[in-house]
Every structure is written in C-alpha cells, then in structure tokens.
Image 1 (cartoon, rainbow, N blue to C red):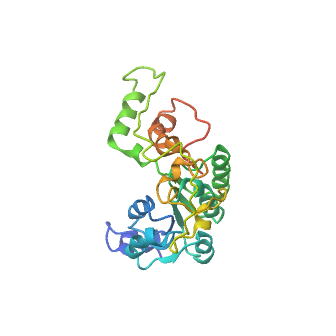
Image 2 (cartoon, helix red, strand yellow; image 1 turned 120 degrees about the horizontal axis):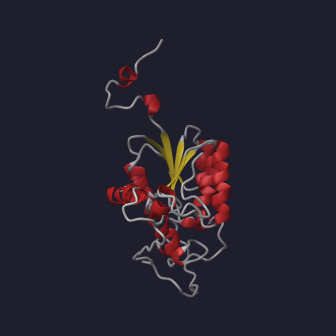
Image 3 (spheres, one colour; image 1 turned 30 degrees about the vertical axis):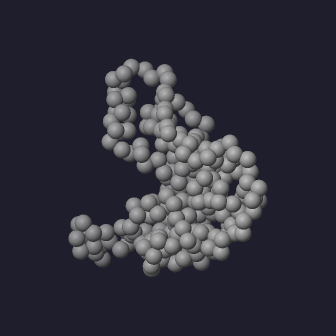
Length: 252
C-alpha cells in the first residue's frame, strides 16, 4: 500500500515522522547551543557537555533530551542517534567527530573542523568510507552578501582574481602569555580530564576555559582557525580560485 507523504504528515507544511532526525550534540554551552537551535524542527534526543554549569541553560531548554558528561557513553548508549553536532573547543573537534562518523552518524562540526592537516585528512577519509553527510560551520558563506560576491566573481565582473586580502578583528582573547603558575582546584561542575581530551595535561586554570582556549596552541589555532575558515571559504570552495591543502567541507 502506498500512502502519499502529505497524508502521513497531515499537511504539506509539516514533516512526516519518518523524515525527522534524532540529533545529539556534544559541547553545548558555547556556540553549540546556537547550532542546536537551528535543528529544533528535529528531535534533540541527547546532549553532552563536560561543564554542568555552562551547559545548564541548554539542558533546561531541552528537558526531554538525555544528559551526559562523556560523549563516548552517549554514543554507546543512545542507539537511535542519526546525527551529531560537535560544538566543543577546537582540540576535541576531530576525536568527537571521528567517533560519530565511525558509528555511521552524520556530523556537523564547529570550525575549525580539526587542528591539524593530518586530522582533517583522516576525518575526510573516514567520512567517505562511512558514507555519511558532514558539514563544517561555515554558515556565513550562505549569507546574501557572500553569495552575491561569489556570483560577481564567477561572472568575471572584476576580471581575474590574483590576490585576496581578508581582515578580521581577531584575536579577541589573550595571546602570547606565559603558562599560568597557579593551580586552583577544579570546580566540581567541570570534568577537567574530559575537557583536556587528547591535549597534553595541564592543571585546571580559568585562563583556558571557557573562552580563551584559542590563545593556547594545545587547544586551538588562534585567529586562523577562528575566522579564516569563514573568510576564505568562499574563495576556496565556491569560486575555486585557489586549491587549499584540505577542503573546508567534506562531502561523501
């Protein structure tokens, strides 16, 4: 028996239940919460964050979602996940995304997708092998000004582009600092070992978390990883003016 889609969904404007994805998110206290908001038409089934205090408002916004600190336990236990949003600090993007990809989950990864070229190539390979859809958060390239600029350049309105200059107000965090000597106790609402992930061990210090991690090489790649992903993406992918070492977007 064949039933038209609009019968199942009751309306052309509503999604059929079979079209709704079960989405999980890791790292929800910062930019991750904005990514989740963009997916609220879907089922938000599970959330994971190492900082209970930072994540508290987001946990409260989605009371039906299962709560975790360790994303690995979430992926292991929540068998119904279709896609995973990764909004953690830069140094854990690759390992969280890789874990999801290897389990056959589609992923949306905050920029920069990875900290190193090796990580990017390994993740791209895994995504192709798994046949999953992936995306890095370069949403600024979908803006009307960015698309209009792309159309002008593709049409040859300004001739051949030989050089591109990009400006940014970054860094907006402290850089060039000495490693903190103070070792205050880890707050009880934070799992510091999970936050560190694959990075070299450092004692907890508020100089690293929740915002200034990009000023430290172990955790971020500074302004390049923060804004170049956005600013140069239109030239690398949309216009194909240059050939980067690694594609900013992975496509299966």
